Image: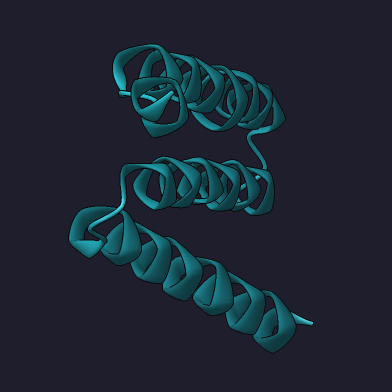
Length: 87
């Protein structure tokens, strides 16, 4: 049982590192925002594995959902729309 938890923990940490690297090195802003949201999901899952459910719920609500939604709304409001510009 202990090795299964260790393996699961290792997979979560690899997921955190991969999605954080995608968020940092991607050229598209929407890809960066989605990768950051997925990173927050992995962090919340890690908190669950570490038996901190209250912190996991807060991280899932704020880090994964709320921040991602706010970034997407800000991105949509600040980017130029090519369709409207050409018409």
